[in-house]
Amino acid sequence: MDKNENYLINLSQKHPHELEALRPYAEENNVPIIHPLSLDMIKQLIRIHHSKQILEIGTAIGYSAMHFASVNQDIQVWTIERDETMQATAKENLANFSYGSQVHMIKGDARETFEDVQDKTFDMIFIDAAKAQSQKFFELYTPLLKEGGLVIIDNILYHDFVADIDVVRSRNVKQMVKKIQKFNTWLNDNPHFETNFLDIEDGLAIAIKGESK
Ligand code: SAH
Ligand code: MG
Image (cartoon, rainbow, N blue to C red):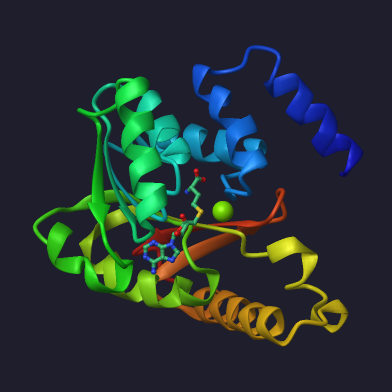
């Protein structure tokens, strides 16, 4: 790991949040929860932007959804997950950490759950599910984002592979990395969003709706 990154992670973990109790579980069970500095960045954006209604695609064990909700009691998070084991663990975690009134689970494949949220308007959308599908999720759900709202996409640099696809051996991974590259280019060229791509941990994109170039 990068020295600076390591230093900042240690600094930020001096006073760990109670939800950090979930990190060892995630690591042992290979659940790809968001990296700590990316999470800190998103939580700070939530504060700056005063986001209240948040949509998350990819709940896993509820770690990031609860962290977002923890910023402020007025925040409501709707979060979509297709995997039944994850759904069950997330449900338990929401109850154990008392976030049941702020975090709402939507069970199903995010390509098919638009109707569950179509009556809502969001201030922020966090895309963190199957990486090859990020563009699909973006196109499907951003009509529900208010003007000036944020879309945050995790893993846009996927394991350093997006910037250096030649080192990828596996055909499947290569295909996924190509999709991420295509998505990044498409988003960068999208006239309806102003996007900032960050080289922080696994890569984070922050897009603002309606700030056309
Ligand atoms: N946001 C979480 C981590 C999510 S990991 C955190 O940082 O704490 C990605 C999750 O997305 C996995 O649990 C996976 O099952 C889920 N997922 C992948 N593709 C999906 C889809 N099409 N619809 C819903 N969930 C999906
Ligand atoms: Mg992620």
